[in-house]
Length: 180
Image (tube, rainbow, N blue to C red; front, side, top):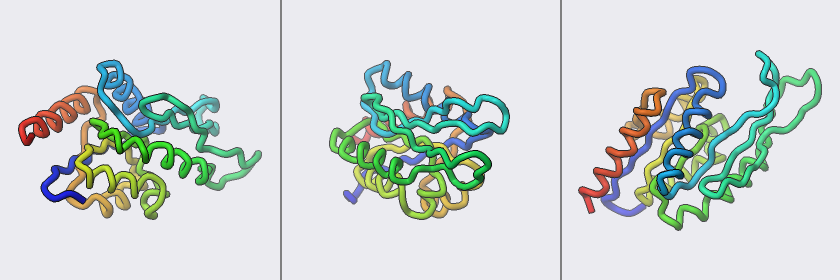
């Protein structure tokens, strides 16, 4: 980690299934449309639109837009975790070299159980923070304790609102410009 670099880590809580995914994906699209260099992933769920139905989970790689399916079909009646951990690790591997481009922001769809256990995107989040790259991610209630244990007092909760994300990003980059 480089001495003296500011560390910005913000998160949004997921008020209902898929809501943070939509918020973060919309924010990524706005930033990319404005020419902001990003790295990371946003999640899209497809199929299973009915209440209680299982959906496919796909990660869109930022900025280029490749897609990696991180869910696996476990068959009818199964209740186990559908996360395909090898696909998730593949997404981590695809994002990792993008940190060398010094993106303005690393976006991660979710700090989940895998990250709470020290795997998944967790090492990459730490690497980005160590390089002074701001990080924005989603967290659900069940993984919030693990996230806060990882983040300590560094984490800043943002309102689940596009304007809150815009204001945080502007503040972070205004502070970076002032420090430079």
